[in-house]
Image 1 (tube, rainbow, N blue to C red):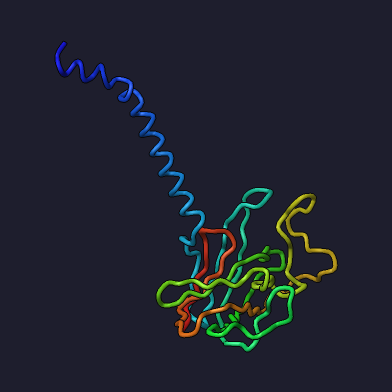
Image 2 (spheres, rainbow, N blue to C red):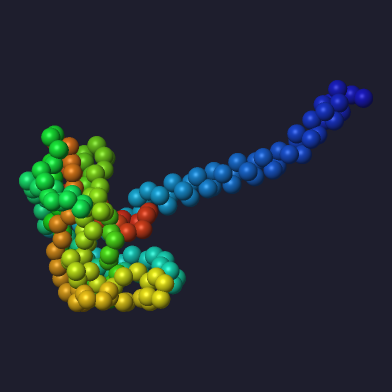
Length: 204
């Protein structure tokens, strides 16, 4: 038996498993890439400078399948505030070394658009992100007690407004509050519902 034939005989099991190993590595890489894409903010749906209007149509899936939301949003201003709206507590001053920054947003959308449950964040000049706590700012993108329809769930279909609430007006404002360490320079406001899609509003 030649040395070459002996090598192939000794390594035949390992060689037979090589395609499976490569397939597993490829599948793992694909999964990691999908996870990275879907769990980050990578797809800008729209943008606008401060005082300008971002006009957005956001395609997404809800419990009933494919749908979309269409809206306009404008960053009016960022303004520090003395009190932070802590969840389930009375508003209180932020901790030492931290500012409470109110993000004043102007909105426009038809009353049937589902806009509840958005996230709002500030981004500084080094790319660091500071998110509004969703439990502290449950109405970051809709007016309180007039939030418009909910996402469909259980027996609730599309376009259903919760009992006791009036329809959302066609225009409104919100001002979620974000905690930001002192000395940070904020350059952008991000708004999103389902990652990786987001809207970017520049801070002048």
